[in-house]
Structures are given as structure tokens and as C-alpha cells.
Image 1 (tube, rainbow, N blue to C red):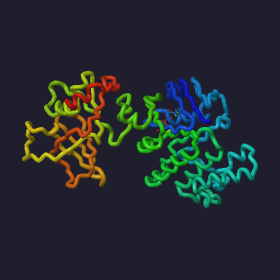
Image 2: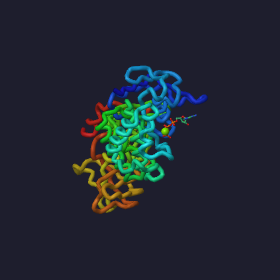
Image 3: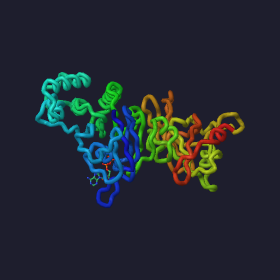
Image 4: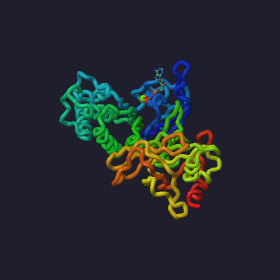
Length: 373
Ligand SMILES: Nc1ncnc2c1ncn2[C@@H]1O[C@H](COP(=O)(O)OP(=O)(O)OP(=O)(O)O)[C@@H](O)[C@H]1O
Ligand SMILES: [Mg+2]
């Protein structure tokens, strides 16, 4: 079992309340990801669960039992740090078996555990080396192995892959997901990486200034964020946020609001649309748009920056009278658009999100109707 319950958890350092009442139920066997900007309290929360930080108020339950006062070793939680924190003078095997040795497990049993774990992590041939003789990725495996041999009820990972290069991160991401499927142990995983959050977690908890803004499956958070903060935190490039234009705004700004279905959101202060839901077509100056044709509506825009990534193109567009650039993510075009090109911006998929003046998401009642009158 490995159920973790946080009830109104709080923590302060001096006058700074860094954790301001966190409630969360992590189910047994679940892989939950903590994301949020730097300093929002992810590591502190993890350390309170591990017993490395005292809990000021609120309750931590592990499998239904209050754990606030339990010693770290008695909580059944094993933490893997970004820095690996291996003992430099011990071999890989000794590093991995150390916690068992401390717990008084007999030599033969220890060796057997280490051997089996090394097989799972494919580091059997490294067991006699010291950490100095390992690559970053290998060290990370050893750090994970050291946590696994303890057979914890819950794994706590604090950005374990952030010191690895991009290719190795992808490999380790897949390994860790496999490991979770194999072990079925509860995992709480802190990351800054979008892709890790979206792909690894059964659920994601989005932290912000010592609170949790929203918890849910990756797709639920992506498609139905509770507020503008969550909407902006998941997705790269970020979701486009378009402010309601004042009555005096330029024509294109008002057209954009209409294009995004603004008429269906009388209470909206701003609308959000993800870059992949936009469409862009070239609009040569000598080809005037026929206003009477049955073409879907579009808005004139200018390419400020075109980034061609091979598989997709990211276009950063200026719409007259709209303050922020609009990002569009499109399949790579055969004839790529260039900086300065005139284009027409359209909506490819009607998935506009609307937010009120307090940045809370509005329920999607009439939006469909507004886009397809
Ligand atoms: N020992 C400490 N003493 C005082 N303040 C601390 C201490 N540890 C953390 N803090 C503060 O608590 C807040 C939360 O820190 P925490 O390390 O939990 O953030 P985080 O979400 O893990 O950020 P990052 O993504 O940068 O790792 C920060 O403002 C940090 O400066
Ligand atoms: Mg941290």
C-alpha cells in the first residue's frame, strides 16, 4: 500500500509562509506529478512527506496513519534527489545496499535484493564501480536503485532527470514509466519539464505560490484548466491569451475577438487559444480577400518570427491592435513562411477557453454556437 493524504498542510520559514494549506489525496499505486514555477513549494512539500522538513500544521497520513511525528526511516518513503547524493567512496552495490545494511538485513539477502534491482535497471555490469566512474545517467540509475531496494510504499522524486542531456532524459523518462508499471508503487514526481508532466503522470498537481491550483489528469488540465494560470503553465508554446478589445480598438483586434468566438462569452475578460488550434495561410498583398466568398473567417496578421523545426513550424504573429504576439503551431509547410510575410490567421479547431476578470475559467456553454453560428 502507498496512499498519501495531505490535509491543510502548512509550512513557514520566518515570516514567509511557503506552503499555504495543501490538500491532496495520492492514491495507492498512482504516479502523480508536481509542477509549478520555481519557489512555489514543490520540494518543500516533498521534503515534508519524506520527513526531512517539519510540518507546521495540518496532517500527513500514509496509508491512513498520521505520519507527522514519524521518523523519516519509519515512513516507508524513499526520496531520489536531483543531485543523486551517492556515497563517493562506496561501490554501486554498496550504495544500493546501504539502507538495507543500516536496517540490519543479512548480507545474503541484501546481495540478492541489490542483484535483482540492478537487473531491473540494467546496471548489473556497474555494480563494482564507484560513482566517479559512472556517467550522469548511470549515477541516476544507481540513485533510483538505492531507493528501490528499500521497497518503499512511496517514491519521492525531486527533478531526478534535470541534470541529464536531452536524449538521456527521454530514455530515462520511458524507463521510469516502465518501472512504475512494473513495481506498481506510488510515485510523487517533481519536474519542470512539460513533456515529463504530460506523459508520465496519471495526474498532475499544479502548484502556485504555496498552494495547489488544480489537480487532474494531464488531458483534463490541458483541455479544461480551472484558471488562466493552469492554462498558461501547460503547453509549449504557451496558450495565446487575447484581452477583450476596447470599443476603440483597431479593426483587426475586434475581428480576432470575433474569430475566437468572443460573442459567445459575454462575461469573458480574455480568451485563450492554443497555438495548435490556429491556422495560417499566406496572404500575398496582391490577392485581396473576397469578403463575399464562403471561406471561413480569418484575420490579417504579419509574421514577426518564423521558427521551422522540421516537423512543425512555430509562427509568432502580429495582429494590428493586439499587444502580445500570437503563436501558431502548424505542420511544416512545403514553402515555409518567412519573417515579414503577410498572412491570414484562422481557427483550425474551435477550442477557445474563456476567463473572467479574476482569471477563472468560464464554463463552455455557448462557445460552440458562436464559432459555428
Ligand atoms: N530552508 C529554507 N529556509 C528559508 N526559506 C526556504 C528554505 N527552503 C525553501 N525556502 C523557500 O521556500 C519557498 C519554496 O521553496 P521550494 O524549494 O519548495 O520551491 P520549489 O517549488 O521546489 O522550487 P524549484 O522549482 O526552484 O526547485 C521558496 O521561496 C524558498 O526560497
Ligand atoms: Mg525544488
